Amino acid sequence: MKCSKCGGLAVINLAQHRLRLCADHFVEWVVSMTQRTIEKYEMFTPEDRILVAVSGGKDSLALWDVLLELGYQAEGMYIRLGIDEGTGYSTKSLEMCQKFVAQHRPGAALRVVDLGSEYGQTVPWLARTKHRGRGKPCSVCGLVKRHIMNSTARDGGFAAIATGHNMDDEVAVLMQNTLHWQSGYLARQAPVLHEQDGLARKVKPFVRLYERETAAYVLVRDIDYIYDECPFARGSTTNFYKELLNRLELNSPGAKQQFYLQFLEARDSGRVQFAEKKAGELRPCSRCGQPTTAGDVCAFCRLWE
Image (tube, rainbow, N blue to C red; front, side, top):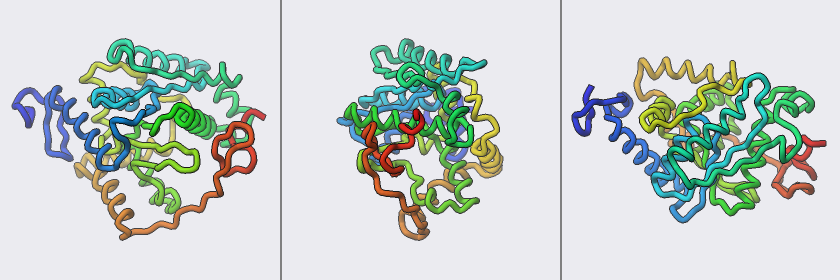
């Protein structure tokens, strides 16, 4: 298989783009695609400071690497959630983030918030003892990460929070929301969630890249990452939808891309309209000052009662 650009040995076949690329041209393509996505959706500018949510996984480390390659002021942010019982998952994840900085981007800033040290408890403990999510850690985990990332971005003067969500992530959520006709979520799903009333802007620069492409990128760049899935994510419905969509993609290259991009175009042009779920009025939490619709005290602060 030959590279479509130079005729050298290709390392990946991008069937949906009718491209076969060698290692060098593939890295160049990923960087270029990311820049075009940032510009298309007006995510941020070179003058902005960007907070990158890193987990030690392939997508977030690849995103941080690409943003730094493009010259953006991108700082990493790792939240240690205490998911270590029997697995050492959080410890290994943090080590991968630190290893990435040491081996690939010396001098890059990595912020670390240790939930256990700074707040006294871990996500597994909170999930077992609190009612939120009926004992499922994923609900507590999402709340904790959103709160800490937003407060860090707001207090640290960052223009946006960047996450490593790829096309597969977005299409799996889109399929789930479409099948269950979650019109409120369909109205909001987008590459950019704009800032409002104390909530930081959230952006997804990898939204045009397939998961296999981010996996290939870290392989070509020799970026080590945590291969293990979070032990609490096993059996998730999102992974089930990803498997279904991958089977569709195998028979019809570009199907995932077409589904997602045409959804965005139809919604944003007004051809398809969704009734957006009305959110309550945002007001500062009386304890932490973060915006909340949950009354006087936000859901994060109530976790510690």
